Image (cartoon, rainbow, N blue to C red; front, top):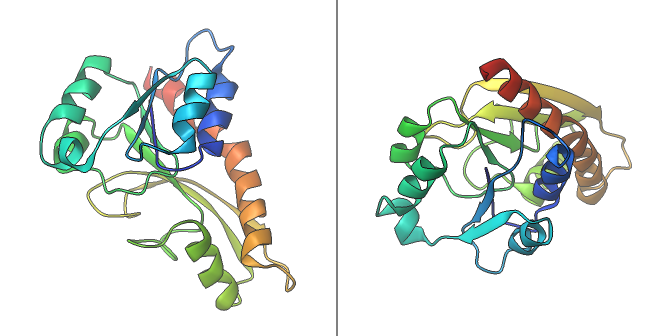
Length: 186
């Protein structure tokens, strides 16, 4: 099960990675944005795609009840920009993971996503960046770290070129880490 808010490139990559797996598949994609490209990508790949609003996520148990019915082995946040509510975190403790486009704990927290992260890293003249895959808790980007890997930053890099390097790391590592977590939990 994947939660996403944007175009869905990581989601598409994950779905395709598991398409031929005899034991693992993405059962649904949830998005908080009705017009998110990820919903179309999920449909095109024959994966159930669902939209929910702020009220059903934060002020009712609607999303929680749907998740309980599906009972996923893992909930993957792939470019999902809302903090997950406590009722869902409690029910799926240590079963929700997120990917962040930087080396946490630096460049994390509320408002630090996508290009904003890459701009801050370039502005601060960092020598390296990378990705962090971590468990989700009640605070943005503060859950236990599962995996990190780095990439060098060249002096000529821009936020856009750094984003491309980070996407390459995400596409290469995120599905493999998901697979490892699922294998280790079964």
